[in-house]
Length: 232
Image (cartoon, rainbow, N blue to C red; front, side, top):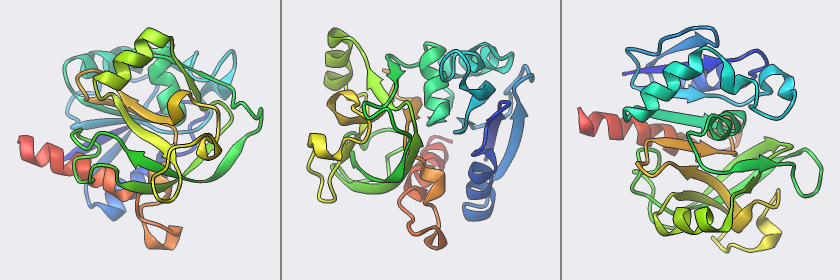
């Protein structure tokens, strides 16, 4: 099993993701430079967090035009697994692979702290080892995680089970006080309709080992591995 980790100028979580895949899970991971034009031979592509191209113009707006994104788009539209974390999520939105857009946090502050996420759909490649309604403790680190989409599309996302993670309290209660950025309906992660593309703002790679004060993020990576093995 082989993972490809796309590195843009300004990515800063690529090494963290590679560490989790190789050292924690024991699988192969390669860095893919933003100027590469192929993602062939990989079982899952990950767009890591960071500040691609310095977040100039708008988060993910320039990275969306990187040469590799044509290959990532083709790979995703053919059913390949693509995970976008934080800035990676923003890039997927800018590329039109996921619905909606990111606005600045409603506090206008950079928010960096642990959050709780409620698993809203456990039947995806990224949550198949989770229980319905399970609460995961995963940190965030972003200034623009305020997810927004028009009313009709929001209704479609909710009704089709594309909302995968929602910010919540320690016991799963979804209320405004646990929303760190103003995101609509406390949304922390969504998929496309087919479920093979996931974008999430929290950082699962930062909580995949006990030494990092938690292992809840490991479940997302382990779910990917389980899903791929079951489908082979």
